[in-house]
Image (tube, rainbow, N blue to C red; front, side, top):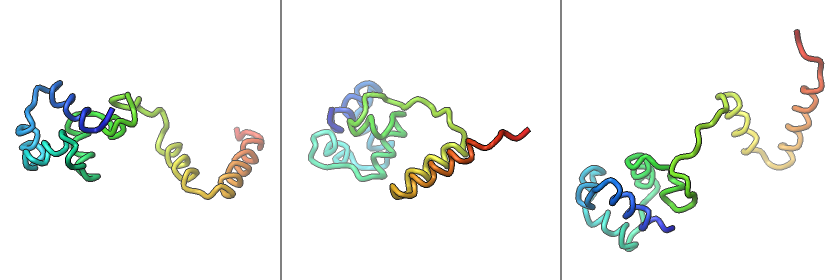
Length: 111
């Protein structure tokens, strides 16, 4: 489903007019109308504002996911940081990191 259709559906669900949404987001009604008619595309910041306003994910708003909100992560901050670091590495360094993790995993457990 396209962004403009998702936005129109969200407006209907909240029983909002384009004018009301425009006022809430501090933009003109013609801006919202342009999004609905697919005449104009929102910028990065507007997509975030719309997602926050309607309490949906940006992926849902953009039609990349059918899930309105992703399930909360069960990862703690260190686990999230490790995944983020891993994803930012070039392929060879990813392999090295995995090899190093396997080495540490093979060591005797500390008491």
